[in-house]
Length: 316
Image (cartoon, rainbow, N blue to C red; front, side):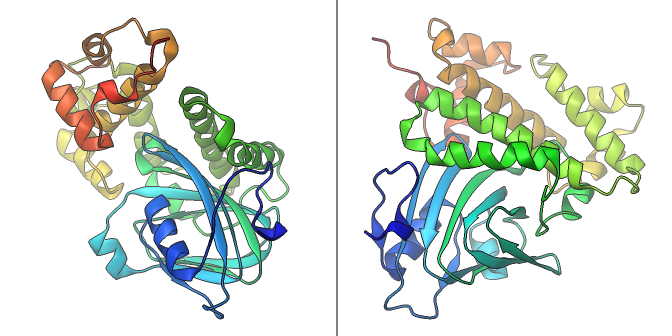
């Protein structure tokens, strides 16, 4: 293994030829078309860990490009944002009609539900945090302004986020699932702050964006209530249910989906927490707004691919 495929700190990561690298990237992130100018000599390595819906990755590879096409989006819909820190190399990110040159130290993010291309012009090493779009509590209009742009190039927020993400990616093999989950959620909060910090202060937040932000905060505050629903949310914000649904349709989701996914995320956090080991799955589900344990288990398995009991820490 040559040094350009090593990750700091050193940990096992197989060096892969192009076909295997393409498959590994597709398994670890989303389905992508991976191309290289010298396919026969291309080598790359990827390591990562998934905890629930959050994925932390380190990728090192020769010059290549990845493309998320309309066809791949139609056949493999995956509603994620990908935040990428370039640690070595240079390249170009393309999405939403924007092309942005990237070099070592630059950070960007992009939407897996829209076509994008990431072109790595030379040997590259990147750290990636990929997470469900529902976890970024920001209006879609605001987010769209900043996809495929440089984030936090010279800002104090960027100076904090950059080493944190690099350290998280570098230490993924050393962290237990609970610590990785907590730190990953912290990274997402930091990324959200970084994106907000990148919005031009002269651009006033629209009434639409203000409502979305207020509703998301309200949902988080009232998740334990089984009565949380579109009608109660609409009433609390003095808008019609129809208008509320229209606002979230513009976000590419529904109010009920946001409520369900946020309840599942909160349950996941508690199920994996060693301090909650004595609490039953049913108690955790009921405390987070689910009214039926069997329905919660089915919903959890459908979302994460495993039953709730499978992620609980083992008792000594």
